[in-house]
Length: 322
Length: 247
Image (spheres, rainbow over the protein chains, first blue to last red):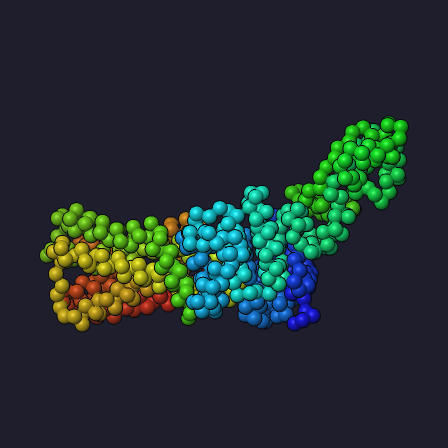
């Protein structure tokens, strides 16, 4: 399977009752890379992961993972993947080492090999000192790292991580990010889901933006960021003619424009010099701009820009053009 | 098969470290024996020493109380992500459940040993022959396996570990409305109909007969038939319920 994709899914659809969770999703992940499915709650991220990790069947579409069909060859797929779900699936009353050994045995390794592997993984995930302690005594970050380590027993070629840092504090999140880097070091291809733009940016080679069961944008973090300014200068203009004038000056550079609210955004690096230069350039007489503010791009902005709505309120019918 | 062994070892290890499992398995039998024999026993007349009558009943109620632990354990695995992880590793649902069931049967065996060990100082004496005692152990084993699998199935039925614990209340109630603690003929007539035709009565009667060497007729066959029936239905239902979690 040298030239084959780690994940090759086409037109996946899945509904729960009348509620569509996925409405035609394509995912292609080349080997050894990290792909992030980025989206808000309810976007269909977990459904996509569950289909690709053989836990549920899609209503339509087809998918191959590690070179095998997820339905007809699901046993072959399962021997080559691992799944780390949203909740750390670890036994609190077992030690870290025991948890890892258990997975080793279930992966078909012998007792000695399972033990060797457990020690090795504890070391790599910086849990060596805690290996003989019960998981119940671990911090959230340690638990997640153990969870990731359990996913690596048996050398999977494709690793699925469903929201690996949801619910973690900032420090634990950074620990988990380092641990994800460790997975890639093993040569695994990774599909992770996340609600955090920063996380996708940090970890992924490619990002698929999932919204309402569809991939609304896909590309490298750089490509996406070019479409959604990292920081933007948000201008509120005095009146319609001022808006038209500034919109014309900005042209393609406007990251978003709302004529009704007289608001327009432009990318900036946030420095005083750059903001001043922008204001001087766009509004030389100092009469068109009523107010300004500098915003750092959030997931909401990505959604606003790419889908025309925020990730919390989803209109029934999408009519907004971007 | 080796997956089921790994899962059993894991469930037993976890049970040993769970305070509520230890209390339920080792302390509860002591408390129930003392309660029934010393506290209630003086007021209950079954035509002989009450401890002789009630030992099989306490053994059965211990199995029933244990159902809660098993159901909660299964539900915990279903809702906490462990099942997803195991399934994505190609571990069969049956292996996962078998691990919980075997661990539950081992806990039951420990409880029954405690009951048995305490019965003699309290005045219990065996009657009959060793082959009868082996037959009694066989019925206890069949009952423990059937109730354990039923509990695991109830764990699959529940949407949360708390709900799983609640559902097993029904299993815990069953021994009270049977011949386990008082003879069925002493009950009001409306209850006699239920008590006489539910699984615990023939099981309790068979155990009593086999342990004491009194005649029991075809009761052991009825007892085994009930156990087999509960087990088969539980296995079938658990397969359907497991599939429900996986769509």
